[in-house]
Image 1 (cartoon, rainbow, N blue to C red):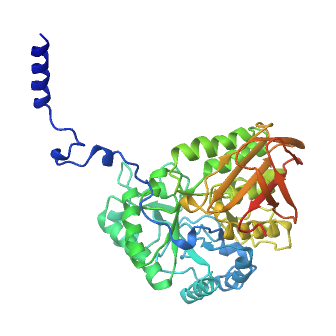
Image 2: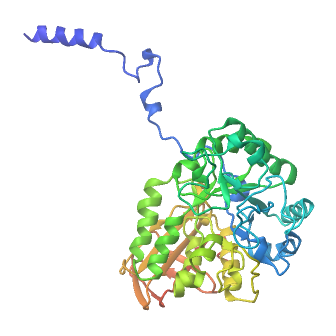
Image 3: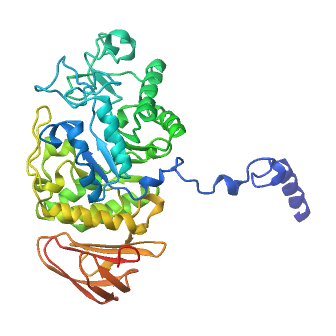
Length: 469
């Protein structure tokens, strides 16, 4: 019986196909097929790895509201430590069905033009040249999804536009954007036109990348093909106004972290505690998003300021902690248009509403944090920086604590996200040793069992390596 069974087993084995990891099979070994492969396949520009972004709404940025006037502010922006200047759309604005007296900058009448209310193409070229001389890059807000109703493309290429059941052109579905008409990206000629005009701004004007408005409304394969074409001209930084990890594979350097901003708002309003932030970083970010995906951890931007709340309304007494976390946590930090001046108004979107400039402590805060980001590699973005490691404390409800470390640099941050002072015992994590306290001359030795005192909404950043002297 045993011999019969052995003979049957041998016959069955001979009938089976060779396993994939058998070299005789002539196939890719199974071990190679199942080896980890990075989701992010397109390298980031070197100059973006430790970048902070400054967003300019030219219409409101200066009393003159011009590109030339904004250009004069570039040295101050550079002195703050910003590396990338994001310009809201500079194109001529549609007049048909426009909103307000000046219209939305996102209603594009001419993709090749510059809005004469802001200046000329030569003004923009001079702006880009000055930014480059200050070792900053310039990205342009790009509206690929829709155009103004009086954009010449409407008449010249009506087949490039989306239609409703009756055959009429439509605004983007589900929106109140009645001042714009939806494009149809199933049309190959539209795709070629859009890619060509975007490439022109890089090759001819010197733009260093783009912030893609409602990036998820445009097919991902268009963005992937475009990124390859732009990178053939020069390395570009692409920021998606969307929150989806697949955008990072071949299309975008960075995407919006709406969920970070919303979670932090809930914490500031008392609807959540520090556990919500640990959930964002250690549950969502670390488990779902690739380590090399950059996320925009903005505290304010043009949409939020105009339609939702000012930075003070949104974060209240937690504002400075929110700003600090946007820089020392994983993410790309950003300043919006006068945020550093403590702007307390919701700036009008369709009218002239210039910022009231003043000296404010927030500018010093941004400057100090961005200087640390510039030099301490632990805070750099994606794989260039260090991943956050959770530090266990005696008060998990109120306190978020973590260490980031990379190539000899490290930062240990402790945040009290509550409206009461806290005495926090440090229990477990890679925090032991000597640290310089950010913003002070103090050097402290820390070990498990030590206690850190934090005021309400207070925070303390400890630095080792670059920026610690």
